[in-house]
Length: 83
Image 1 (spheres, rainbow, N blue to C red):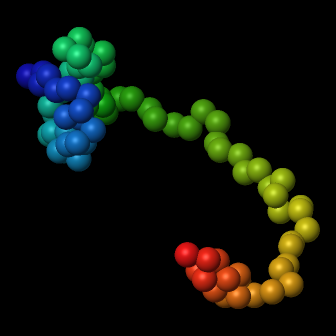
Image 2: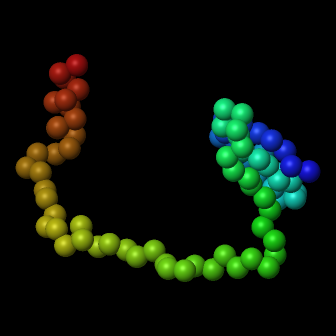
């Protein structure tokens, strides 16, 4: 059985929808009454292997560390006194 739900219902009830998919339910997602997507359970023969692992960009670790001449609490106290 295919259930039809709006995009808003999917957003607000996503945990319930995922539990339904785990039980074997399928959902057609609509936007303004028009079907735009379908959420269906995966079959067991589908391989979800990783095509390309995420790479880590370490460009920020090469920057020199900056230190302030006054403490953060002093800065916060100064900002709070302006309110």
